[in-house]
Image (tube, rainbow, N blue to C red; front, side, top):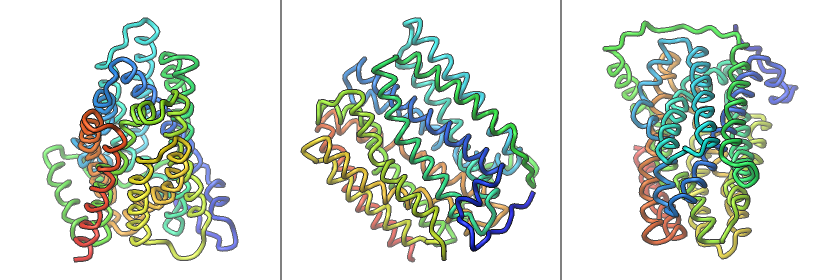
Length: 405
């Protein structure tokens, strides 16, 4: 089914929300992403309360990103050969089952760290398909004239979930406990499954030849590395996930040690950057005219790293919250244009594979999470986050130099 052409006199967001396919995919993404962030914060708080170690928290949260590094490239090749709608539904069913098991273990007093690690691995495996399945379906539902606006609006929603999810996670943990938090997550994963089940979807599929999957991934890598914009996206994605977003892995410890924060205040700290990204993402979704390009993507990312370095040393919780909100402008540019640039510059027949490579670059995040966790245990969370952000500024400058060659 081909998407309707864009009407220059109508709001891009109104056009998108009039498309039932887009709305179902957008709603499913909002629910699953919100519950993912609830699970991550609740898991981190439980791990820190149990062990008192920032490194233990980083290990639990690292589990969600590890599958992206290991099988991210393959996920793109698989998504070009198998029905993307069915892949998406299977992932939502699996995460619902996993959350229900954790809720049961918590309710019976049997929950241990290794359970959360395995649950995180399952969630990360499902998350691996996000770009190559749901995000690609969102962009295709919008049509070529509305890709950036569609992805920006979807990213804005993701920013909302990254804001609401931690707040809800902190509230759930403090008010109703781990079991209720994961039970709510399981129920909402099933609602997302129902939304996707109603999507009308068709796609051209390649033959699935397992022995050729690695060759197809390598072909996708050659395509991406030969194109300056695609090369830029992959490099910036690695830097942001290793040096920038890894700060979230020690947020419970950062809030507790630096500001003596309660679980709700830790949730507020975690919600600050997504709130800034939400406001900036809305501006991107509503804008008209030429689509922004690689310069906005790169310098937005650089701006976030600079602000993160300053926020890490903030003398008060509220100043750190304000700075992270401001840094959200940069992450909105990063999140909105990451998929948009890939969809507009990658060849149609290789888009899922290139998006799979982007997922693999996102999966480099565990390296940063482990490093920042170890630094936090040795030097304290403030200095750990600041050092990682400064290193990220240097790494991003190198990526920009290499992308222009």
